[in-house]
Each structure stands twice: as structure tokens, then as C-alpha cells.
Length: 312
Image (cartoon, rainbow, N blue to C red; front, top):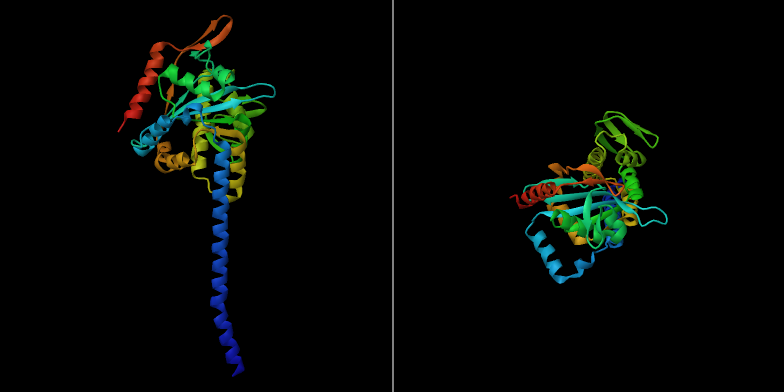
């Protein structure tokens, strides 16, 4: 009789144990989500660095209307090479134009030696705009020379770029020209890159038969690979590392709401990426080498971007 009662008690304990385990799992999951959400908010706050014009209420209304109507958005990416005691220059300048209505993205690499008018400074290399006036002047210079609106920007220190590639577990690109750079060898074909290798890969230009244009093409390839890898990244164990890297190395005028909107409504544009190459010629002006782009080429790029932005 007592044996039967003991068995009955043991059976009744199972639902209690299962319920306790289920509650514990819910608490752990809930705590993890809460922690991640707080970490994201904290990181975005650290990264958030609005332009002076972003404080204008009319500017805010304009950007809100663009997102509300899911219109095309242009984002300027700046890879900044900062050294000790030096303001630094925008080693990489890439304009992304995202149109969610056509689910398409245009990517334009702007050669860093492009000869342009820098507002208030005169004719010079476009990457000097950052040294003269930080992100504000870089954005203004791109807008005025290409006659294309820049709605948002994101600047990343190149050291942070290297760390970010490592945190993603590296990226794979298809290399068209075999070369060596910084102690790394890059054969033709598919190449797996860690952070250090990715940095060497996008910096080489002297041994590239296409010079800066070949370098720009490799930059676009690495960025596209990183975007695709990041979009599918799901490792929570690395999540904290990535947030720390972003917070320490990235500045942007995108706030949390903007990022959520981009992720929700614009992320499919990465599935249809095409590139625009800016054509020009190298020239010596005043003893300095510049990449000179004719006005007709600026007009062609502007027309192609505006057609993309107006696409339905």
C-alpha cells in the first residue's frame, strides 16, 4: 500500500519539475532579450552623432516623410584612417542608395583622389574634406559635387573595420587578380579573409592594373560580403563583442528608430546590388596627382542615381 502511494507522489512531482524548468527557461530567455535590447540601445546612443543640420525641425520632418512613404534613402559610408597625432582622412568613401520599392541598391565608390571643389577650401582631393571639416564637410562635398542628397552617414575607424570582420567570423570574396599585400597572399578565386587580411585586401592599389578603381571594387566586394554575413548572423555569444566594436569605432546620425526602419523596410535591397564606377583620368596638377572626373561623368552618375531613386 505504501509503495503505491510513494509511486503516486513521484508521478505528481513530474509536472512540478517540468513547470519549474519551463519557468526557468522563460526567465533566462527574457533576461537575455532584455540584456541584448539594453545593450543595443546603449551602443546606438554611443554611436549616435547627428550632423548640425539634423537638429533642424524641418530636416527631421523631411526624413520622417521619406521613411513614412518608403522612399529611397542615400547613406554615405566613410572608412576613416586615423593615426596618432593626425586628424585622419576618409580612406574609403562609398555612397549607398537604397530603394525599397524596387528592392534594389546602388553602390558608388568615390576614388579618394577625386579632384573636386571642397566648400570653403577650393579644389582638392575629396578625401581631404574629412581632414578639413570632419563628417560635416565630407557630406557637404559629396552632395554639392554630385548634386545628390545624402540623408545619413556612417563612419568607421579602419581598426574597427578589421575587428568587425573578425567578430563576424571572416568573409569570403571572389578575387580577380592574384597579389600580395602586408604579408598576406591573395590568389585568384574564392578567398576567405579574416580582419587583418580584409584590411590588406582593400588597401592594395599600387600593384593593381586598375589602380584606385580596382581597389574600390575590392572594397565594395568586402562590404557586400560583410552586409550579407551580418544580415544572417545569429551567434549570441559574439553579439556583445560586435556591439562593443560598433560602439567604439562607428559614428552615425542614424538613431534607434531609423535603424529599426531600415532593417524592417530596406533590408531586402541587399539582394539586388549593382555598382556604379566613376570614370576619370589621373593627372598631375601643381605637382600633385589627382583623379580628374569630367563634368559629363558627374552628370551621368547623378542621372543614374536619381533614376534609381525615382524607380517604382
